[in-house]
Length: 340
Ligand code: ADP
Image 1 (cartoon, protein in one colour):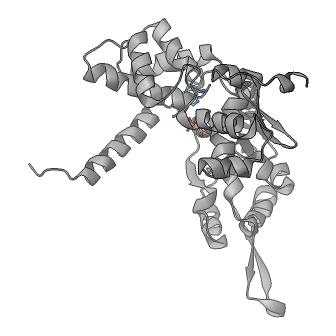
Image 2 (cartoon, helix red, strand yellow; image 1 turned 90 degrees about the vertical axis):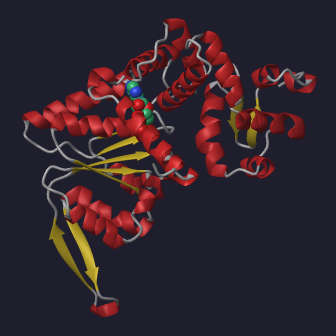
Image 3 (spheres, rainbow, N blue to C red; image 1 turned 120 degrees about the vertical axis):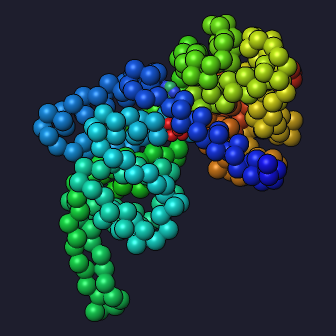
């Protein structure tokens, strides 16, 4: 048999991971745990549209990565029995790309655009009449001889997702007539349920206590929970151990994740603010430079979790570490800060 190259093995592993991510994706509303408010609103909106025999209106989901935005789009496609076409903001490079996507939709299709905040502004403008009037305005030619032709589009529902809703222009935001829904972080109990379901699908034996232990380190995020479960499963399998609390602790310390679920980058970020800038406030660009990280990564990946845990504060003068952060890192909280 031909030996696989490391590149081929890597590709295969990646495929397996994304396949697992898909198999773990909830297939019905009952399996979609939490986000009750969004879920209830969506169910009413979908039912009402169905009763009127109309297309559901355009929807926008926002919130940190891995909270279940794409999954909601899939569930809506299942519920309505409509086809879903998936793309993302950065994948639509030219006006023509969007025009071809829209004109190739079948009546009733759902178009899902992930990372819509990364959509080019002149492409975004094409979306306005498409969302509002179901038409596509195409400008032919340049200068005084330019003319616009209008193409009628089949009825469709746009579902968009973003981790950075503040970057969306208000004209775009206001065109999501079905609603703009904020996805919340999950509670430990909700994440525990998600882990138990994933463990059943992966055929891994585990108990409540172990699932809760993983949940507590999962950044309140289903995708992280599934990732950690899979790594703990690997560790248990290789060491021929049961997947119990000890295995979880060993796996997570190997991954460099502490008891609050902080990654090494989270810890470094807090340490820089505390040790180099006396706890802050300090500007995001300075932190990013000190960490050699992208500002966007810090804003989208690290900060939401650190803020949620109460370890970091965003102030008008920059980011500041809280007293809790000092305590977590076993560093004395400066006396002068206590006065404020
Ligand atoms: P996003 O689009 O917000 O980045 P996804 O919808 O891709 O997140 O979710 C990532 C993974 O997390 C999914 O494949 C699914 O396995 C899991 N997941 C997300 N939300 C839930 C939920 N509410 N219940 C169960 N599993 C979930």
